[in-house]
Amino acid sequence: MAAALAILALVRVPALRRNGRDTVFVAAVFEGAGALLMSPLVYFPLDQLLGGANLVKLMMHTLLITGLWFLRRAVLEAITPVAGDRPSWIRSLPLTLTLGLQTLFFVLTGPTVTTGEWGIYHVRPAGALFSTMLILFIGWICAEISIVCFRYVPQMRSSFRVGFSLVGAGCLAGLLVIFKFCCGLLEQLFPVLKPVGEFPNEIIHLMEMLAIVLVGAGLTIPAVAGRRARLKRMHWAVDTLAMVAPIRERVLLGASAERLLESDPDAPVQDRLHRMMVEIWDAELAAGEDGVLTTEERFFLLSVDGQLDLLPVH
Image (cartoon, rainbow, N blue to C red; front, top):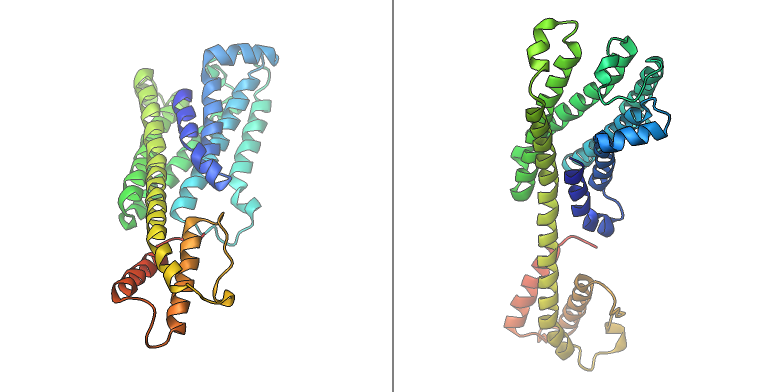
């Protein structure tokens, strides 16, 4: 699980470099660190180093909860970018309350010794509530993301439709895992749930991996498609610039300095192309009825203008 999340984080590095931030990358780092602590090879030595009181369990839950919160943010920002007028501290209140309550219940559980099976402490009410906070938080996140994805997927196109369909399906798989954990937590109070709580762990681990793969792939597909679209736009701009430059040189031959815009060779290709187009059309207007462009050049430049209008502004 930790390896799959590490791969997701690596896939998001280009977006992190390009934008200076990436919520999916942050989510993958937190979730990956939490998943790493699940391994007995990491959990037991580290917890013994910290005093053998299951502090690593608290750390692991905190990392998983925080990672899921950033995953929720990433999905909601991608699908519903309007954050609303509420202050940030109110929007983050569910995270703050969950982390605060789980820490309180961990402390109230009382003395514990290093164990990979926290369920032995569910006989203590605070110990059971400590586990409940993580389960409820995961269930809420998975349910909300599933609802939002399947609500907006019909309005999406191409890669976004495919990607967020996978994200919604992955969260549904996560809900099935949470249902099993809930049954395991409640089986002492409701013995009828015991068969569900004893569902084979191998299948549950496969469901967990399926959820991670589906969500990771779903968040990656739109990003990869966007990168391909950006490369396509860049290649179009470079090729078009090479065709527009000779036209500019001809129509501006002998033009006065005030008709030339300030040149910046380090500017993005799209900006340089736009500057050339402005200079050419300015020269065309200044020439009056005779004009300086041929009919073919005029049609070509009009088509370039149309494409530039469709490109995102830098």
